[in-house]
Amino acid sequence: MTDSLQRFIFDSAPVRGEIVHLNATWRAVLERHAYPAALRDVLGEMMAAAALLSATLKFEGALIMQIQGSGPVKLMVVECTSDQTMRATAKWDKDADLPAGFRDLVGDGRFVITIAPSDLAQTYQGVVELSGESVRTVLEHYMRTSEQLETRLWLASNAEQATGMLLQRVPDSRQDEEGWNRAVILGETVRREELLQLPARELLHRLFHEEDVRLFEPRIMSFRCSCSRERVVNMLRMLGREEVQSILQERGAVEVGCEFCNRQFAFDPVDAEQIFVADVVTPPTSTRH
Ligand SMILES: [Zn+2]
Image (cartoon, rainbow, N blue to C red):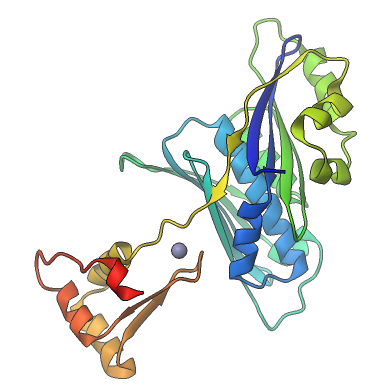
């Protein structure tokens, strides 16, 4: 299956939805860090959830979803752009044997959604306490309280794929409670294997064959990391000349790794000096490989 995000709507009930399949995108995340299985599956569910939510929120730029935990898993970050590119990373206690349950992994903490517009307009941030026993319940709670949208999610992830389905109640004048409830009850019958194995059209047929459901063209999802040497240069400028000098004295070079894609950016003393020369154009990155 290709990496796709696919919208559908019910013609006879106030329901819209999305189905996401992440294969190569998800494996690109897994190739870059060796995540323990328990963490891997939760991070995969977050990937699927971020893609699904990105389709329901209007934005140009990046949607960043974070779970900040107090358990052995300290942080999980997933980013999805309006161009349907994604990246993800996590921080965890590498000495700990990770437990299997979501709340045992993350403990108490916060769920943060940030929308960073590409035109550098005002960043939006929503924060809720972690509540619930899964990525799914955390997200459903967030959508109900912060976005006032009735949303249901079904998520599944393994070493090969991250997939999910979202149903959202469309505000309607008829207050069609029954149509929404019926869709949710049918959605609840979905099995993990079906999410992982069935293409969108077959999954919708299996779940909602008695409803009038229209499926739209898929949008292609892919892995991409937005890190660059230029961004690292800006970060080092913010850090300040003195701090950079002290790192150089200690280690001989400044090395910064991207937490998402593992790419390494190195600055020797000559490079580092140039960072602080006003209006100097950064050397092209192609000479650095
Ligand atoms: Zn990167």
